[in-house]
Image (tube, rainbow, N blue to C red; front, side, top):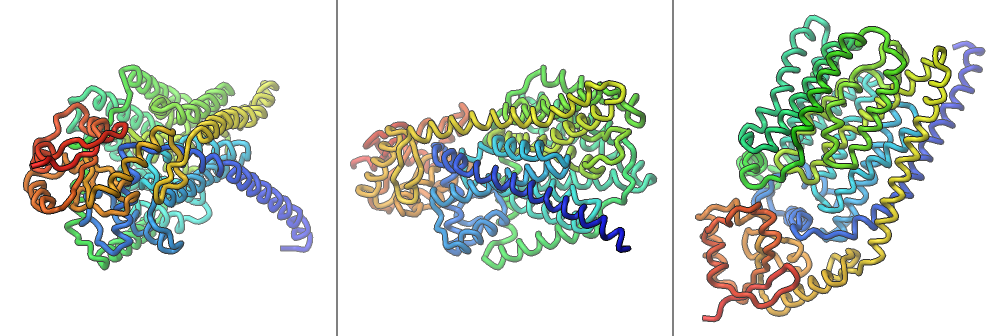
Length: 619
């Protein structure tokens, strides 16, 4: 570099440094502003079905040295327990409701920050970057219902994969290794999420192959992606909502596939398959080796984390609200994708396409917080996959347009069979697609300024307006959260000093825990509600920590538990009929030995809201 070039470069470097500092300061400031909202929201809810207690208890068992998959019936893999266990050990934290919620609040804030960084890297627009951070924070507010649920870790992994994709052009090997590692980690947290991520990574890789191989592989993968939802949901296709969801997913995948086949081929080489395999193998081997060294057996991991997970639709389903209108909209989107690609996929688009992209992107972001409306926006994923044909310096890059829509489309299948927290995680896939679409639309409108001067003014206002709407929505959420938090009272139980509930509910739980401490040497919960063990400092007297032990344990297993429990002095049962009905979904509770033994040998000794305390029947 000559002296003259160096002199010119220094002002550019200083300008970049100032921009980077401003961006970092904006994200850091927003994170600090969101922190108290996250805290108040996280400590204002306690769900009676108590997923939180289950994960805390199984984590406590793991930290106590018990091998995984022996103390309970987990369907989540070892990576979650090794990461969270390592975190708790490193900071000297004991599993409790307060600790689990603080960790989850931090995960929530980090995930929101990653969402903002992702939106900014895809658009190079700070308005959209900060708006993306706020949208991510709002959609992940469902974390408050199930603190310490592995959904937090899977969200961090998926967002890391999305952010990594934006570096593909500058660091292809590192991106490939990260993609493989994330897929491996997801497989060892929640198998279905690992499979979905792997499918998206393979799809994006195939779309980047040289023309000869791309023409062979990509149509096959498009077909497989389109039929995959139907194949996945085959066991329950006789249910109307499942069939409608499968059809919507199939039409959505087909629309994205059409856009991928019609788009200009990627000019850069595909990510290295070798580096992807190396990254995945490193995580798989390292994680499983650590688990096996701790006493976990391969057959236990396979039977409980893989086989049992595939059988979960037989145990519990949570329907998603979907109907024929969703199918009609997805079909219309597919037709729109075909028509648009035939006319504009490789030729200049009219200026009006910019407005279409802005509308589609805003609709995607709006739908993320109006669940399950994201299923109406998901069929528009193909719009983000198509870069405007005349925009040669678009900041998004080609690879993210392949991987991110594939992740959103395939990842949406996680809402089957349980559409609880999974709805928010599936909706999160629309975050980068909305950012891409809005950014593309803004850039198209600006380029149309010569022919339509008003278009530039519209383009300049889009990002600030979107930001303002998102800020207003977050301010409302924060106000409601703060108002509710102030109206609640501290629970005041061991390990849950900071949790706040209504006066009545807090008093009921304190009274019940007091009776358990005073009158019961040991107790079981029916269904599994494991926070009571944390509050009393007791351990389950038998392996009944699974929330649905009464559904998944067969007669021989339940009879063994009865034989084990008969000799327990002053054994009590905490029963919650409302939670039992929630899990049973209108079915009869299977009449198996432990259930029969409770029904025949215990009577109610007290009622505490929805909770009943059962004690042995007098002989």
